[in-house]
Length: 509
Image (cartoon, rainbow, N blue to C red):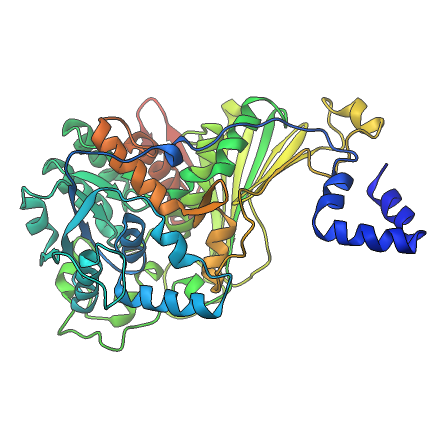
């Protein structure tokens, strides 16, 4: 029976139909209908990091460099959150039964680390991060605090402190490579936010420093902890969708925050921001609050759409398909909507070719449209929609499923397989930016029915790798592939030409 046959039959039986409608509301009928014309696919892969218990005889001393938006999220993922956030969560939970954020945060694993150092060049942020680092009991203002982390005025001072075991780097893009190299040379394990580097030359230096100094490096692609990606990789390896020929990944956002026009702190001024230290390796420029808070809008500090957002999509596809560095790239786009003085495009289209794999990876982005688009992996026999959820469909002209489609055992518009991990509770997610990241599996994964922060899991993987002397999930070799690929897309756009990867010489030409 098909879906329309079942619904048509119910319509002719009002009383029975009413009873069945209640059953339908509980999803039982929907499951019955969905199985009509569906081929079951058995996928068992899961994230092994979720089940690991972080151990260690003594806590690791961790310092954090940069505590803006992402740095604050990393502190939270590590188990250190500001008391004011706890107060807001507690208040919200009383009024909203779907708000489980504080409940979930309390069940987050203890990583057995201490935040002993904070470095930020904006005094207001540094003070708040210190208060977060002292909140060892994850409570509000009335709860007992621990020892406050030490504030370092420069990252070099922090790296010179022998008591610091590892550092989290969440500074702007133009500092990532410089700080990672210095940290590795100082013998500190490194968790660095994406992208790995700001320039091509420093990409090689990062790899060299990490390997020569034998430190554990983790690049901040928390999507590597999403259960849907493990199942997508298994489906690909089992040939469920056949030979892959095209991958499409996209970014669509339509809000000032989504276009990096972040709020400017009214307390910020030249008196409490170390502007000279912010500039660092970037071109000199007079003090600017817009550039400090919205640095992603300028090439002077940013890696643009390619380095900031495409890298998440690329890393997800690299995780699933082992893509590596592409043979070539072309890019186009421009500043079409945000005429605010920015130099990075708000619309970008890039194509990355893999002739040895007979496939292309296409990236398309707009920061001025909310049209929902996702990530699609397309093969001859089917395709996968990959994000926080996973859906796999048969292609109507598939060779593999030809007879099953002909005989009605498979319907191309009904998934061969769908996976929505553990999501029985409504999410307390409100902002457009949060919804965007949640839809791509960049906020949460699930342990059974328990929602878990992917940032927490990625930090957990890094800490566990340090303690067990193994490679982290997104190590420096995968970081190199990410960085070079993103730089190829950026270079193609900025130079308006097709660029190539010379695998023998290991350079972009």
